[in-house]
Structures are given as structure tokens and as C-alpha cells.
Length: 217
Image (cartoon, rainbow, N blue to C red; front, side, top):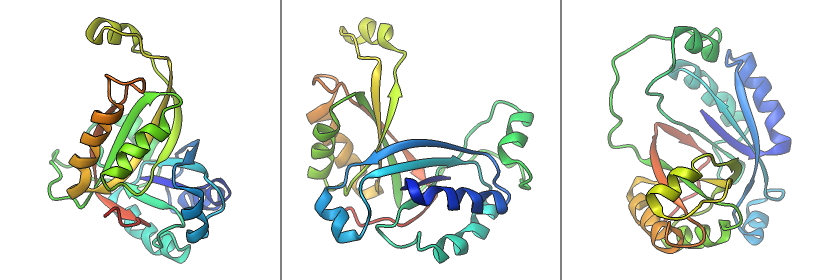
């Protein structure tokens, strides 16, 4: 489960998650890409964000959903919560740690089909967020969340692509409708891809459930 809210709103949510049995949370700081005018219209205080990654079972999320609604996380503009399917974990002990006291059932791997939203993940050199988001918005994206990161594949990039990619990276999360996914990714590749200074690459993951989404067209 990925939660993206203002930094001030994150501590109460992580306390809620722990109270509901989801004890293990990984939090990173980020900033939004929505324009200041739009932030004002939505009543959001600035663009400083926090991103929390939490391992939850379907049953835990079902219990969390009404509590998140009480905190208005189902309303566009207050934040966003979405689920990404997990395909594998490096062992039973690791899974038990990540899930803490949550009960779970191991089932056969299945492919999600006909999901309504997808998470588009863009990895690019630092400093080109505006270029990437301009491309994404031109294809219907509403906004995104930027995380700072560090790359380790510069030698591979030099070998396969013929240039060195800067170690300082930005990861951009965009949750978009499945219908708009291909157009958004194509626009990013065309306008900010490997042939540009941004050196952006992108991929998408199916979103199993989401709350707080604005329409992306």
C-alpha cells in the first residue's frame, strides 16, 4: 500500500496503520508536481509530501478503508492511497516481518487484469521534472509525486546506450487511468526519453485499489 500525503498528515496515518496491525512502514520525503494555483483550489498546503510504503493484506486494507474515509482520504486533493500487487518476497521470514501480525494466506500467483488505474514510474536524471511532467500533462496526466534517488547502473548505460547517466536521480510516481497510460508513457518517452537530457525511462504497475484520485482525463 502506497500513501502519499502532506508531511504533516503522515504521522497520524502511520499510527493508524500500526493500530490496525500494519507495523512496518517505509517513509520517504518527496514533493508534488501539481501547480501552485491548482493546490490552492484544492485547499492543499504546499507541495511538500511524504510517501509511505506499507505491506498489507487484502483483509487489512478492507479494515483500513473506512478509517481512511473518516480522514477524508477518499476525497481528491487530500492525498492518495493505492495498492500494488506483490509478486514475490525473498523468503517466509521476510514476509512474516513485513506483515507483522497480519494474517495471510499464500495463494497461487495471478495476473491482474482489467485494472482501472496504473502506477507509472519514471526514473530520470535530476532536474528534469518539469520537462517530464509537461510531457505527461500533455497526454492527460493530472500530477505526480517526485522522490529523490541514486542510480547505480551508469556503467550498464554506457555499454548499452553509449552515454553516462548521472547518479543523482528523480523517481516520479504518476497514478493514471489505464486508458490514458499508453499515451502518457509515449509522450514521456518522446519528449524526455533516453535521447534527451532527462534520460527518462518509465514503466507501469497495476493498481489494485485507489482512494483520493483526481480525474486524469
